[in-house]
Picture 1 (cartoon, rainbow, N blue to C red):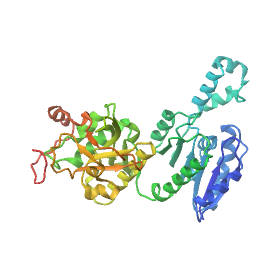
Picture 2 (picture 1 turned 90 degrees about the vertical axis):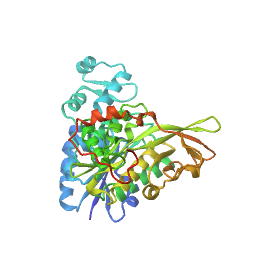
Picture 3 (picture 1 turned 180 degrees about the vertical axis):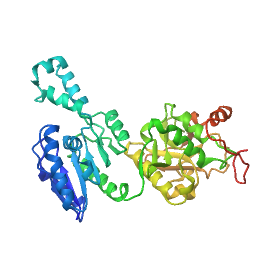
Picture 4 (picture 1 turned 120 degrees about the vertical axis):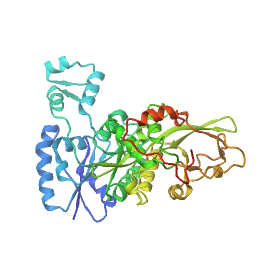
Length: 409
């Protein structure tokens, strides 16, 4: 039988593990009643515990809260577990200590000289602790899903986002959540997050994660291969992606790639835009794309999985709706319908013209209720074709072909 190990945060207890039993049916859930108060103590205590457990269990899943997640990473237990769920994890202890020092007006020189300083907040600042953290950076190499609260006062979004990107972790944000998930609404969100993780994120032969800076050209080439000679001889989409990354409307938190066996096989991204409502309001919405899957894996279900994942992340970030140009036969399977059904019109499209390409999905139910108006495509999508031609010269040469069904000459 598999074992779920729950690691509590500061002030918590192993008894909290009982809450998670219902979320992992058919699996043994245990709480680790550790005593460590420092990362070096955690290494001595956590490592042998997980090492022994891995010998007797069919698999180990880690659920860790706050500093419990940090201690787990410091102890290097990733080699013994198959996946981890981190709830409000501390991922940059050095930053947290420095922030506490700044708040308490304690300098590094003073802390070094005194060793330990008791602060008015009740926290003890330790030079030994800070020094250890700096000399022992986190190394974490296992599938990980992170639940982060937008109102977390211990870890900034920039810090958690950077960590998730560096470690290829799935990051979910609860817009109104707090570091300690304890209200009925917060616990319901936590429950659904774990259920979704067990149902989708890890029962698969791929991962979906944020795009990394160093793989931008690889992503552009993936897009180029996918769109080449589809809508026109050659394509522009890889250059569009290159341009949009620099656009202020680009949503970097929703810039995803799909990876399989270390190879990029898909990507999707989102842009902020608006509806100019007939009553004079500007309604913020998202648009999407380019979105693509590697040619050899098309029509095998990967596109829908990537689309559904990215739409869910956009929903979790609080966005209300996505408007997009696409084929209803595919996108309808993920909840899209004709934008006309919402009373939304496509800009510059003559009245009575075919608008079946113009699709919409509400991410928040009722978001577009009472709204009619004109959708505006972000200007960044309108690239200069001469500049696109010049950009394409940096890629391997491919033959441009005029094919039946292309939309542009």
